[in-house]
Length: 78
Image 1 (cartoon, rainbow, N blue to C red):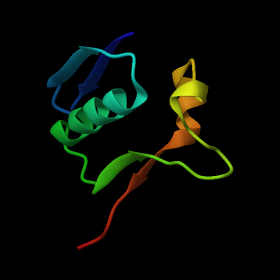
Image 2 (cartoon, rainbow, N blue to C red):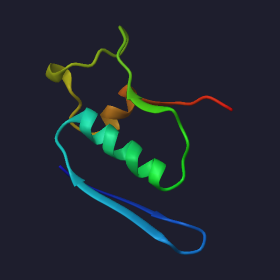
Image 3 (tube, helix red, strand yellow):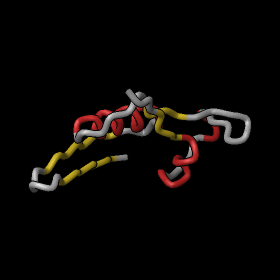
Image 4 (cartoon, helix red, strand yellow):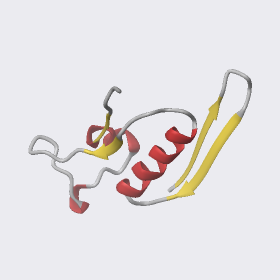
């Protein structure tokens, strides 16, 4: 799959990241890099695996909408 992430700042500055990926973990890692590059602060963007929504290569979601159940933000306040 090909991804294009685009952010436009208040002053009109455009930040874009394009990449190809077929793996959820790789997509999450590259998305986290993009979000950090656009000014978001968080400790980790991770794939959540638990008994209610088990994730494995065999049941990997086909769409990003399905993948959202496995991804969450975590952060700490300073």
